[in-house]
Image (tube, rainbow, N blue to C red; front, side):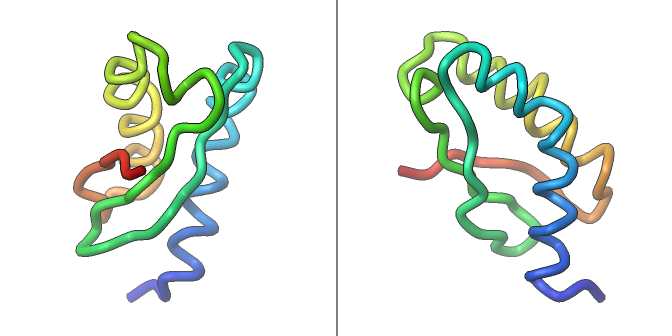
Length: 79
């Protein structure tokens, strides 16, 4: 079983592939916590108010994380 710290490191690494796209659009993403194999993230900058943020979460962020770390069951945004 992975420690939470190692799991978050793996999540951050999986986000490195999409983070440049978020930054280009004036945003970013922060991993807040992992609870019961659900990653909690905070959308930063322009991503926090973007009307496409839900699609970005499902098609970009969640897909990237789950493909890299199959134990993860989902991703949710928190404030």
